[in-house]
Length: 403
Image (cartoon, rainbow, N blue to C red; front, side):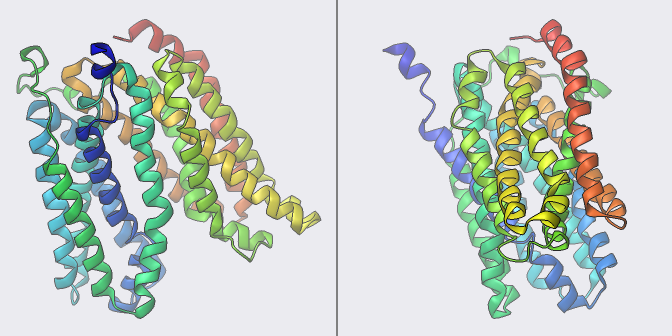
């Protein structure tokens, strides 16, 4: 009975961390499809400038990741999380003020990116602190569902809110949502870190990036590129291929695949099948990527078959990535001592962020010729990542894992 209680996943603290993560992601995703419209209508800038302004946020997130891991490992994790969450929520107040000067808006987005990078790094580590290690894969899987749900419903909510043309209502919605999330974050109770888990305030390159995770980071980076191209250009590719109705449902179906995969993949990770689950997820994602690459050809022969391919591909792509996410996160955590969990998470998230940004940038250039080429490249990169993972990452992990 004592062991059952000890290994209970759905505790008050775990639930509160998941709720706060969902509300944080929801307040973020509300702005994802709406800020480009806001920038065009408020500052009257072209699409090129919109892209530059929005990229400042991504650059800020990437810049703060290594420092976020170091800070979250050095100082009390709960305090770092709550302070970052507070600054993240306060940032929404700035959107009510910076309506006349684009430069101030850019500075606000940079600051908001810093807070988001710090918050997500600390949050990904805090959730590990409040769950039993025996159910870490399962717990990370369900924790990831919070982001998937926010991704599924946040953009839809944002577009619904701005249908009235009131952008202040949009920012108020994000502010209130984030504020409620902050209350849940403040209510989380974390265990005291043992003396052996405390780290010295010593600066070194290894304190900002997990050297043992470099190979895994490279493979993860290769996976993130096609994911970034899919989230950025899939709707435009579908329209070019002839799918003109309900194209936006691709991301809803993809989110369904992401969520469905969490029902079993995390449990298999907890049974020790970390590398096996990652390989399976890569294989499924590869099949989905092949479907994306062949979409235009299939639509050219049969639009009905094209629609079927479009939505089956969405589910497989989401299911594949949803399968490997918790396993990959666990792989990074198992390569690091407890005192460097946040650094491991920061390294994991950095590989993903850089890949997403690369996918957006490279996809934009390739799409000038043909969107299908983007997804042919994406399928190739997933296959390359799988080969590199099997040949190098998995053996390295087995030699250097700490648990």
